Amino acid sequence: MDQQADEARWVTQALAGDQSAFTRLVERYTGVVYNQAYRMLHDAQEAEDAVQEIFLKAYTRLDTFDASRRFVNWLLTISSNHCIDRLRRRRHTWVTLDDVAFWLPSSQAGPEHRALQRERREIVQHALQQLPEQYRLVMILRYWHDLAYNEIVEITGLTESTVKTRLHRGRKMLAEALGSDGETLWNAETMTS
Amino acid sequence: MERRNDDELTAIEEQTADEAIRRLLARYGQPTSVAPPPDLTARVLARLPDKPPAAAALAERQRRRHVRVLVGMLLSVLLVLLILGSWGVLVNSSGPAELLGGVTSAVGQLVLVLVLAAKPLVHVLFAPGVTLLLPGVLLVASAVWLWWQLVQQTSPAQPVEA
Image (cartoon, one colour):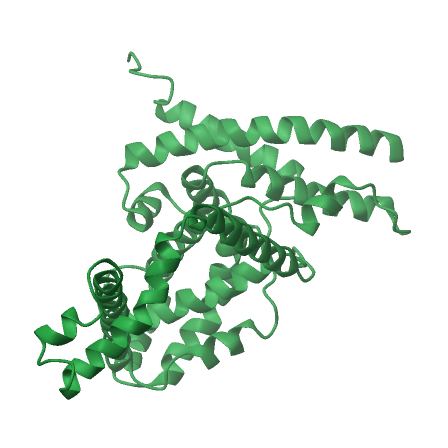
């Protein structure tokens, strides 16, 4: 509750023209916004651009912030809408160098176990990208940002029933995606142990 | 209670499914945080306007209005040129000038110049080979765009997960 009060005060100060107050908010939430953008967009460069644009939007719309809400939830609302817009503007799905590197066997020397840990995390990120953006969003908010259903409702503007439906479908799709990718990883783990 | 469809779970089923996916993610070391670049905060702050938020919002709305006006003016000019050019090609070159004060008046001469400048553009649009030209132009534009996308896709190192 103190954190919420602090942020409400910073917002008031920022609206009055105190940039250092907004700076505190940026410093506090850059990581959170970046994580969401990266999980949604699966591109580091694009996520960095998105973060800058999101905070710029937040700055110009600061007068619309409702102090009864958590600032991070309001920020994640802007971030969610921005990421969805960016995904819709993508006209083609390109094979990135990361996708190619994901498929190629590692030729690097080094501990196999560390490489497998990295690959394990990349498998989840890759699986997440197979979800439609609307399901991906609620999955990220629920399992990476650990938000409650009512908070996801607040951020997305959906009904609780719709959030639960999308989570249910998202879980199924993610489990299926991890099921097929995870089998490959299991075989690799067995061979290197 | 009877379910209306497969997507409606009871509270217990919801909790069970929630825990199951968390266990599955934990097998893969997730959820984890992705570390942003160390200079990202500084870049965000550098991009913020110097004005207070209200003034920045107003400036942004004005900028968008100016862009809309500019685009509108540009389209209007193109439309006027197209109309004058078409008139010059299909009817006569001096017709519009004569309607606006005659070919000897300043306005009339300006209009005459515009009609003569627009005529070649209209000739191109009505040329028999334009249907072949357009796909060619689109193909070249697509190739350039594709090349640019591939260059952009030489992405920097992906972020390190905690």
